Length: 111
Image (cartoon, rainbow, N blue to C red; front, top):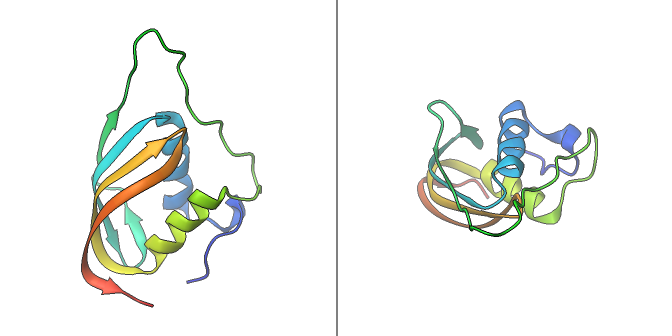
């Protein structure tokens, strides 16, 4: 599968997940399944928001339609698209962007 470059290249599940990451701002997703190179959003993964008191709420700004993806987002979705089957045990999100993840590969990577 071709790696995404802009929001127009995203699968429906990827666009939904990107919006949710941006709304989360800071936190993590746990137990996110991957099947055939696509995120499985049903059931929805565990979502944990980090909150710091006496600090400005800081969420990522939403992407405009048909804009170029930030490098972290493009790299994350390119990696996911290359996984046959697995589970992201934890995906850390900072400033609405994927920062790091721990993944269990069940079916290996395609590449």
